[in-house]
Image 1 (cartoon, helix red, strand yellow):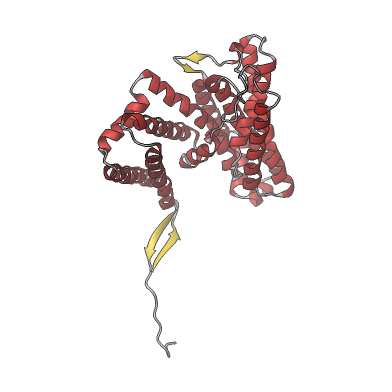
Image 2: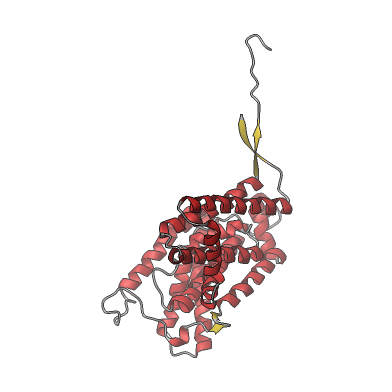
Amino acid sequence: MLKIVKKTEATGKQKVFINVMGIVAALVVAALFLAFTGFNPLQVYGAMLDGAFGTSYRFTQTVVNTVPLVILSLGIAIAFRMKFWNIGAEGQMLMGGFLGAFFAYNFGDLPKPLLLLVMLIAGAIGGGLWGLIPAWLKAKFNTNESITTLMLNYVALKWVVYLQYGPWKDPKAMGFPRMPVFPDNAILPNLFGVHIGWLIALVLAVLVYLFLNYSKKGFEIAILGESENTARYAGINIPKTILVAVFLSGALCGLAGIIQASAVNNEMSIALANGLGYTAIITTWLSGLSAPVIVVVCTLFAVLTQGGSYIQTAFGISSDAAAILQALILFFVLGSEFFTKYKFVWQKKNHQTKGDN
């Protein structure tokens, strides 16, 4: 009889080996799928890399796709380290974009450096305050944060829909429901051909790494994540730690929102998040909540996304087939995490005959 049992904690080398084998299995199965649909797998894989890095424009798009994933994943990692399952990055990103856009639309005459600074701070505050709602409910009433954060995503989306179809609707859009384009002063500048958000993401990765691993509050967050009783015996203020951690988590997600609105969309929109908050949950989990690994994982995910888009035009692969290819790779990579914690064992049944004692 085949049973699943929990095994001892895998070493770093074992985890790397298991994850590499997951990637290899993903590539093999995806290759079989491509061959079955009539394509040369090696050519498709080569084209995916070409689609991500082949030209300066494609490379730029890969970086642009990486930036919001990195910042969102860093924010989610802070909450996840405390085992507060923040599924609300999508809504926090929207609310950060909303509050930052408020200053872009109403104070566009401010000097550009000042306006951008105010927008970034406002975006972080907007996402942080939106995260405080489920954090307070958790600290006060021990509510299920997975449900409250998820529900607040829909509240945030409906709020932005109201703005787009109502008070913030662009009168120059000839009746189309869209918000105005940001003024020039509210657009983030480029650095080496890519918007400066990539530099902000790298700085944040360093800061989050230092915060989680070397600060007192980061230590308290980790202790609370391991055991609430241990945290209580250690004299940690549990409600305060929950509020601080989730505010920071939401603030980073909100910051990602205003960066995306300013540098990429150049406007506020209901399509701002576009599923990025949910995708970031996957990249956060795959990274093991490690800030440096988050940068690597998000980059690889952006390569997969950008490359998947390119092969649709290069090979005439349908969007559905490209999505299946991406899903197969993700399935095996995520599935490999199972084998870092569990294993299959074969256990023989003990047959007892009547009369046996």
